[in-house]
Image (cartoon, rainbow, N blue to C red; front, side):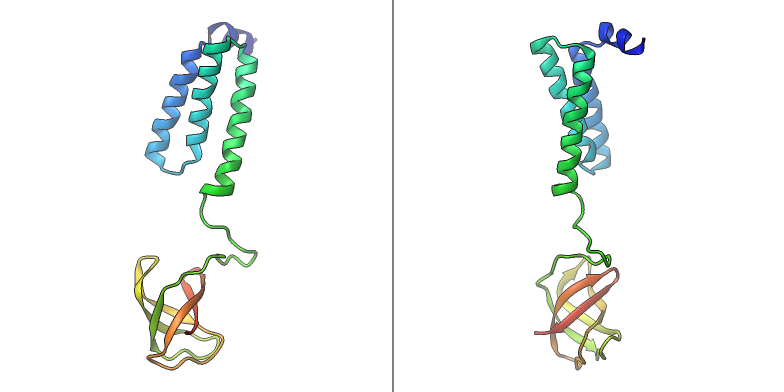
Length: 151
């Protein structure tokens, strides 16, 4: 009953307005997730304007385009992937100097040459003993703790 009603009353420009509303919501959120849904709605409006399709077809096209945009969002746009242990799988090239000696698998302190995630001074761990004033580079970031190794 509802789809029959929408089939008669849903016009091509309704899809474009829906897409613009979704794009405005996306501009306020900044996640890029809703961007694909808005673009899909606008594309459905254009397809309906050119071909005059039924609401069921329009809805099917919008769902398919939305699912494709969500898949693309998960593949390319979202935050860096996490490994099974929850560690980021990207490496940073920033180097720094050890301020407090780092014992194996213990914490020390490192001051980096340039900010890492907003700070230049971080608590750090290492798999080997690293003396004070030794140059180090980042191996990986584990939450709020950075693992380093000598350069």
